[in-house]
Image (tube, rainbow, N blue to C red; front, side):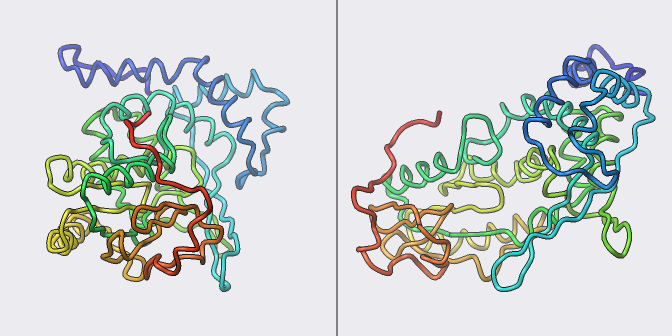
Length: 330
């Protein structure tokens, strides 16, 4: 039972864990989690329960759900597989948790996110409060103006599908060493996916579509982010899409090996077709924007600029567009 965990009060990490458990299990936290999940709507999971179904007996449902978590009778459902068509006949797979699982995940996210937010590096911009992809675009512009003209434009191959469960749990345990909370997270990432062939379980991957997955994705790459803190390189990362910037071509070429080695050490790999060394004179595309010399412009179509470079025509610069303003992060 989560409520039976007895910490060593002389250990600050244990004290934090038990404090988080109490906050996590409060009925008010579950109400706030429900409001967030209900506002996001979303489809039912494999149990068929919709947002409207859960709301019909809301107080009883929330109370019973909270109690099941507290007494360790709660069991996560496998995610439901949803395939969304993409270009050229390919598919994007979403893994949809049940409504009840989304509520419990959101309740835990409410208390875990602030713990890590103060620890994450300033080079990470995805899934964080008061930050967006535009902040990442502005960061690239600032480093460019400070003389970082060479760029490793990179992408991680199937990032969410290749996150190693054991390493992820070790990273979480560095901050939150509570068996009950760790078991909950493990159940969500290991519960599997219901496909036409049955339930599929793996030791890698987190469900893209689960409430808590964005936080887990940032935790997994936090060590990667911190490598650049005391480096002569600059990193701007938005989820699995990132750029590394250097002052010289020689340095960015050497950085390719560093980045590849770092990612390989945590079970990840650079996408061979979406990774390139370039510079601002040649141009590149990042987060839906084209970077070309001193210009930055939103792309009307994802196909407008490819990874092979953005330097098609200066006429592609939108009228009146300019570099994002320099300044500190919000």
